Length: 197
Image 1 (cartoon, one colour):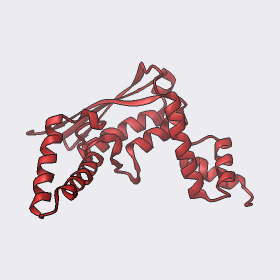
Image 2 (tube, rainbow, N blue to C red):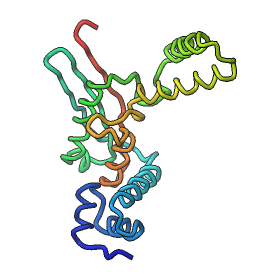
Image 3 (cartoon, rainbow, N blue to C red):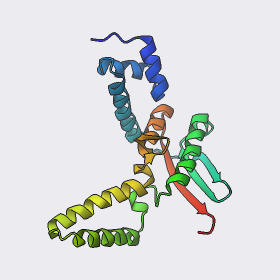
Image 4 (cartoon, rainbow, N blue to C red):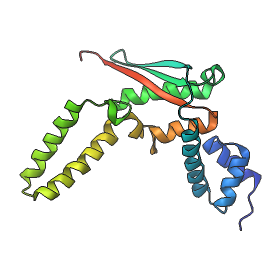
């Protein structure tokens, strides 16, 4: 059993933003393994986020990002209280989301936001590509499903790898923030403008 030092707790706290007792508990459970402790806290963040889902969110912020006057994003991020809405970390998260959206150009926040027409067009393209390889129908369907999974990962904001830390998805990042702030937070909507589009 590894002794959990105050320095280890401090390091984990700085890395994750979780509470001191949560960090100590995670380090104990992970037997001092920092990476395992981070994973435990991330899983706990998911549990915290699930518990908070469904609570009313009437506060929040709208943040913008403009890149060289040619590309602009406006994003609305909602939370439950004015206290969190004014929190610098919450505001920074919203600003970072605007920059992330500018960089990655998602088609929607979740898969349900992407039009059926776009999804069908992608499926048809993948089907034609797979059939060109001469593979049997059963294999073609598996290829299409695999490519559609990748399509959603690349085009749904929540499933995208966060541009500043590709080890995390936007959803992971949001769940960490929910865990830290202790209330429900959601990315409500965004709009992205590109000159000439």
